[in-house]
Length: 41
Image 1 (spheres, rainbow, N blue to C red):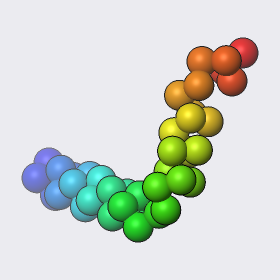
Image 2: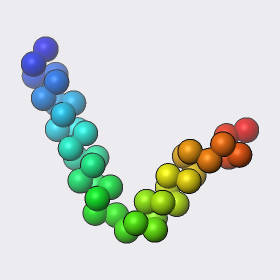
Image 3: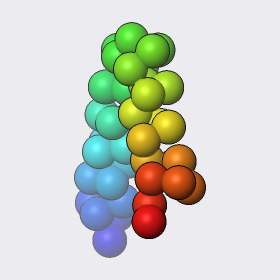
């Protein structure tokens, strides 16, 4: 179980690191695309 938590923690860290390296403009565009309520139906 402990190994599973470590793997998840590493995955989250990797994703956060990836997003931190992105330009903020594309990050904002990406967030708008996902969280825009008009886009989902």
